[in-house]
Amino acid sequence: MPLSMTLTLNGAARDVVLDDPRVTLLDLLRERLDLTGTKKGCDRGQCGACTVLVNGRRVNSCLTLAATLDGAEVTTIEGLGTAAALHPVQAAFIEHDGFQCGYCTPGQIMSAAGLISEGLDAEDPERIREGMSGNICRCGAYHGITLAVQEAARRMAADGQEDAA
Amino acid sequence: MKSFDFVQPRTVAEALAAWGPGAVWLGGGTSLIDLMKLGVAQPDVVIDLGRVAGMRSVDVQGDGAVRIGALVSNADLTRDAAFAARFPMVAEALLSGASGQLRNAATVAGNLMQHTRCAYFQDAGAACNRRDPGAGCDAQGGVGGGVAVLGASPACIAVNPSDFCVPLAALDAVVEVQGPEGGREIAMADFHLLPGDTPDRVTALAPGELIVALRLPAGADGFAGHSRYLKVRDRTSFAFATASAAAGLRMEHGRIAEARLALGAVAAKPWRVAEAEAVLIGQTPDADLFDRAATIAMAGAEPGDDLAWKIDLARKTAVRALCLAAAGTPARMPALPASVFAEPAGEKVHA
Ligand SMILES: Cc1cc2nc3c(=O)[nH]c(=O)nc-3n(C[C@H](O)[C@H](O)[C@H](O)COP(=O)(O)OP(=O)(O)OC[C@H]3O[C@@H](n4cnc5c(N)ncnc54)[C@H](O)[C@@H]3O)c2cc1C
Ligand code: SF4
Ligand code: FES
Ligand code: FES
Image (cartoon, rainbow over all chains, first blue to last red; front, top):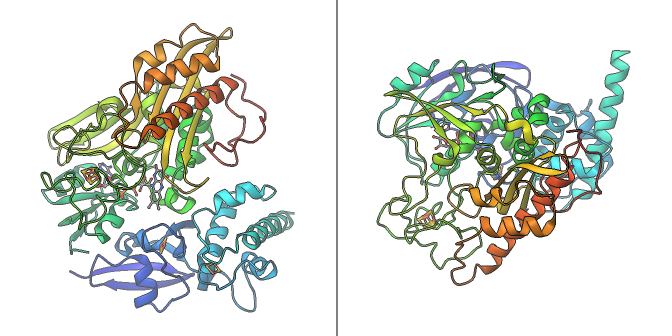
């Protein structure tokens, strides 16, 4: 029995008909909605390449059944910023060389965006490393990733204060 | 993945009515979906609990007990500042487990029910008595230190992988269950079963029973001032425990008035020994005393061919957890929760 559902995907309402409840959010995005920015690494929750935000929280889309998401708000790397107006986390990853091959990068960036909204203490690199430990980087770009997350968190906190003022 | 029917009940009653043989409950899916992909779990019906009302809050009850709804996420429980202040070892254990992403999705009930990480259990091609009673156990003589040194049987040597369950056992948590026959409560001590001859029976839940909440009894916050979870693992973060310990002390005038000690990753259930706690009562904290308690806790451990190191590691983990607890709960969650790479002693909470 096909399942009809509505998602808010990167800010826009989308009607989705699932022919099979086995489809994960990751496969829905990549195979059916042509949003291939979200990557598949392990497909088992172990690498973080598939990280997206669901209702503002970072999760592994490979372990999320799409059928559970009727009414949910999903943000993928495609919806975070634009080439013309990068999200602060995206800008900081470029500035600090937070990647090499780039395969883990969409997941790293979505995870960092989620982590910062969780109220990360950007002054402590150890807390950043711990908070980002669900994202594996096969190229070992961790040094740049840590600096990028630190910078983005600081900048977003400062912007937040300006907005509030 | 085998195909299945997918249902989304809105109430506990609807959920219970939807259950039949071949059905499974779906919490956050972080354990179950993985196993379904591996062909280890092959349900006919997946009952998504995500829409069931009334299981997402953390409530303080009249007597001071705290009731945690089954669907509260692992992350949300650690973010509840009042909860973390009263039960710091629970928050530290949760934060030492899995990753930020997984903790956002994982539910507390799913954590209790998570399946063993035994590599042979996860390999649908291997012989495993837990999956397939009577098939044999390929983990015997297999590789890795992730096996039980206490309470194992010839049928199964798997450990319970949960960090969360270790402090829950130490604090005498209670599991609230609803089923076709009505409601009942299961003490944490009785919740996970040792394998014996029936390794396929992992918990005391009967078929069709649903966890609706967990409860920490009134008084379990008496350990808040001297409470730690310590976890030894292959890497500092995002790895299951090789050995872990939850330690809590209630201090009165410099002496131990009450003590709790539970060990993780050494058996099919969190390992708690009453005599190990009893020797601490009335004493002043001291490493030799803690070593005596830890030795009692590990009594009867079986080294098999090559696990003497694990027994030693678990004992030392318990001693160190007790020492850390005696030093006082840190005022702020350590940057690396439950890590042996301790930061310099910071400010402690005021007990
Ligand atoms: C890569 C990885 C690393 C991890 N590392 C750690 C770690 O270091 N420490 C740790 O402790 N855990 C770790 N975990 C495990 C994680 O904590 C569990 O997968 C999670 O807690 C399960 O919760 P869930 O809600 O996702 O459960 P689900 O996957 O939805 O369900 C798990 C089981 O519980 C049953 N169930 C769910 N809800 C109920 C209910 N209300 N009543 C009865 N039965 C129910 C399901 O039927 C299923 O059998 C890790 C997991 C992964 C994938
Ligand atoms: S140890 Fe237990 S879970 Fe692992 S293969 Fe043997 S029977 Fe299966
Ligand atoms: S693809 Fe989801 S965590 Fe690796
Ligand atoms: S940049 Fe290559 S895997 Fe991270």
